[in-house]
Length: 197
Image (cartoon, rainbow, N blue to C red; front, side, top):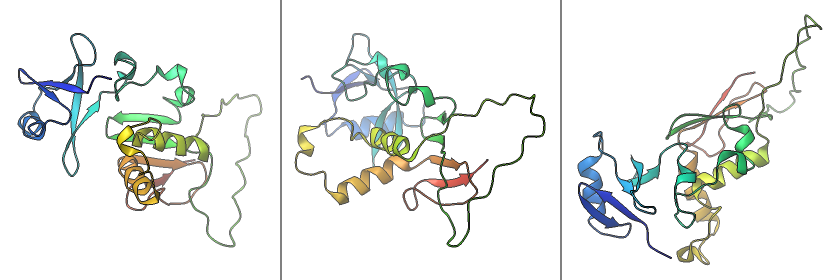
């Protein structure tokens, strides 16, 4: 399997190249974008900055990458999350995603779930907005963290600490809106819980 390579400022860098961080720092915040060279001509990527610079896939380009590329994702309609994109999963930017759930993120002890509002006009048709179940939310975070892929370097290393670290990073920038009032976070300090009925 060919290693991931990026084209930046006229030069090709393997993902493990020690000079990649310097090259990314030079173009970070500029209109110039690195290109993933998994296919002929390459595909534009964007740069995020966490503890270090990270090259990430642009929205809606996962299916353009080669199937062996870490940035490859099938078209939305081909995955279980496809039917939720645009309704339960709203991508404002590559780093800012809003998800809508069909469960309360928190509940106060002794409080019951508030009843639904009465329908004023029975002739009026309301199509319920699709929302994510707890399982769908976990699958979404696992995909964002890259745990839906096998990496030989991770063999024997997917312990609780590693899962917590990468799921917390994947949850950064994800805003959760539950269907029932209540404020909470999926990962402490990572997912902001906001509610909207």
